[in-house]
Length: 326
Image (cartoon, rainbow, N blue to C red; front, side, top):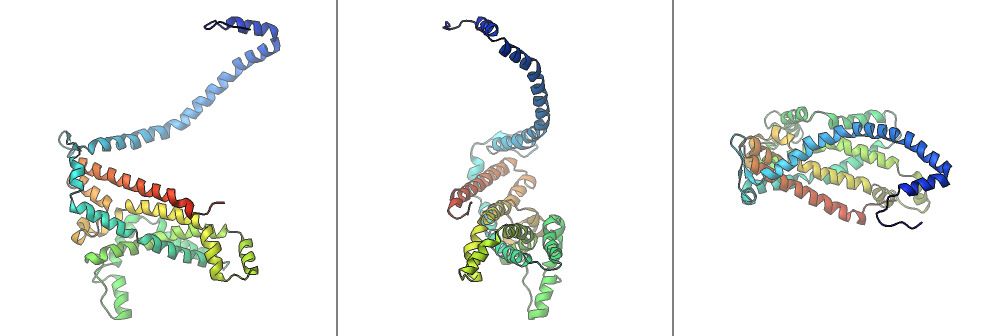
């Protein structure tokens, strides 16, 4: 049937109902039953979706947009904000403390490969069918779930120069005085790395343990038939098949290191000697809540966010070259 443009289709529906009465009854039945059911689905889905959406809008998007606006302003929380353009960013790239805190943060990244090596060794040791092995797995994982503030206070005592257990052990075993862990600028960052290894190796070990248990034993059996040594099995089977876990640990480790704050706040008072214990997040905290430079702190936070985004994007971009995917 030819229809003119703009013609009402009521006549067409009437003709179709006369020609096909069964189809018309079925369409009428669907109209009477389906919409109500779909309305209930929509209502319930909105009820479940609304809380997280509101939470994101209130506690995520709103602070994000507010901090972006504040990064171009001067605001001390007590007087009205004043637009200053890019002054905050210009001051940031000329501030020595900014580069010092950024260097300290990158220095702490050295703990990531060290932690991965130790965690992989522990995972291989824990992946044995020995009696009571679950107890040791639990012991290694306890630091991961321990409160970070309590752990920091514990390590503040362990690293004490005069009566700390670590220096006492060094003196009793080697007969020399241990370093001033938290008072010497050269030892502050290694002490943070040591503490991070103790607290994070257990979680990485569990990931590696799950990866090891997911590798089919037939791969190793075939390698043994071909005469491959244990080292070649580890190099050509274990390491490649664990590459997704390597990738995950590296990505999350870098993000976590760039966001580290609690240990530095407890162990390094006012940034530590010569500002050697201040990370970039600690620097933001000082500027925001000690000096009340909220606009400047927002600018530094945005630079940090962009830096983390670029590094993470770079890792994902080149992950296809070394991460094994089935």
